[in-house]
Image 1 (cartoon, rainbow, N blue to C red):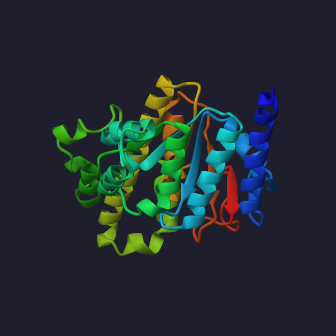
Image 2 (cartoon, one colour):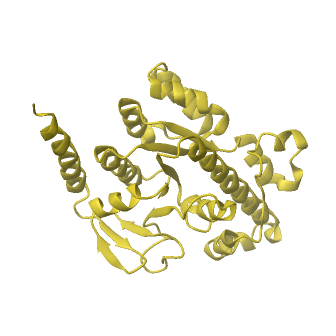
Image 3 (cartoon, helix red, strand yellow):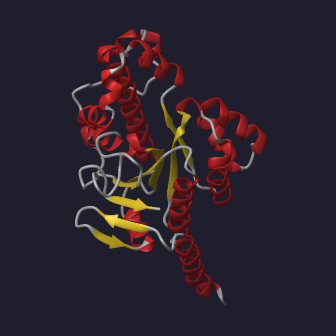
Length: 281
């Protein structure tokens, strides 16, 4: 008889818990400069087909923000999936087994560490996904391909290596992110062998953005009722990166981009062309 009460109470408790944890956080809606609440941020995310939540990989507060947003969306009964830069697309079955509860934590950690570093930073997110049976989606292109492009450029990939990329993956140094990266890392670019190695770095970023965008679209085609919450580094989440690739492919509305404040992305130099929301933790 109290089912209706529980249905109302659970989202309220989740909201109270999450908002108290980020009580001093400032969230700015960049379209109009207005400060919004965590609840308003979650509502905007819930209305989107794809949400990108940027991170500095080694910053615990950024992962806390991601988990808080996931909890709010789940508490509001919004069907979601979690897209991961940290896992290569050929590891999808590992994530499926984890969410289904047929893979233990030691095995999941080992698989994660073959793809990425810092399991403890992501552990609570993985545990939450398994507890709630929230699908997790491996988005990244194979690491060996990224390393080859970073070292020798996209042209160095063999036909066999290109088969490991999602069909349609491209490398385009004229896309807006390249100018953004050059502006952000200008001094670094100048000292990397007259910019050649920096071009390869940009090519690797573009290949990853293109590949991850295609994998997002592929998943959305299979599960159109779910909001895909993408956890990725800020340089992939910024509108010039994965969102730009999604828009080029033209099959989804513009995603919502949420970025935490960093030395490169802050209230002084970040606007609506980079993100929809900026979170000062």
